[in-house]
Length: 105
Image (cartoon, rainbow, N blue to C red):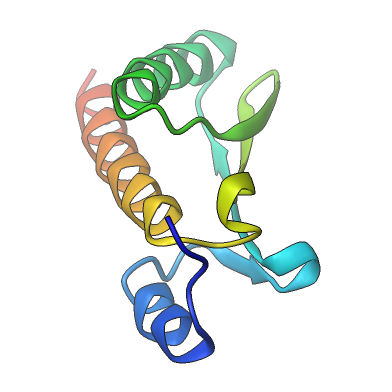
């Protein structure tokens, strides 16, 4: 997996508008997600963890009660790669489904 060029990165970032780009150390993207409580945040993290494990691409993340902070970068590529963009898109989809399902309760 190769690091995205500047042109590739700009195009890719448009597909994940909620993520913040950080150009340090080859580049990474981050997002902070808020949930109703710890149980919802942890349930979301479990779903992402299962998905990430299948794809063998794991986020750097932390959880503080109802807030999950996620950072994605590809260490093997020395920065941001298409794998990070794909995982961010998957995380956004999981969050969207998760938020919709839990809002209906």
